[in-house]
Image 1 (tube, rainbow, N blue to C red):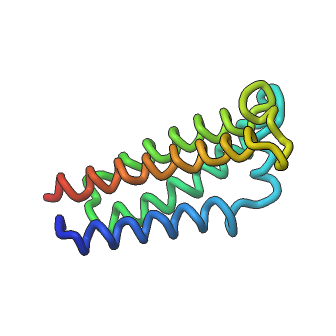
Image 2: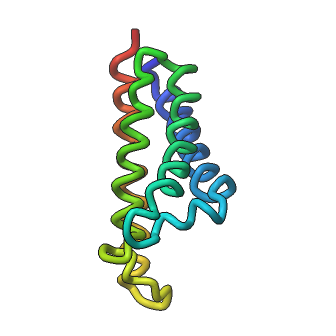
Length: 128
């Protein structure tokens, strides 16, 4: 592992994982991650678990010593998605016809992709 082909493969795998976990596998229940109070914890945790599971599958295939990256993925998703959807945070910007909504959406996606790039960097540069 370490070649440009390996980097490209991991970029594709993490992009597919992100899309599948964020869109096709995100059920209506998981969208309740924007609820006020503490009612958001279970739906958001389930959504983050799906992301962590996808990361776990990739990591176990590439380098099982980095299985702890599932916690990086889970926690970064939990924090960013709560900030994006929480009604006291960026979730207050709900109007899809405004630039601020799309800026918040873009920030969320950027943070998730940068997290993926960090995990890819670790997997590529620390092979056993």
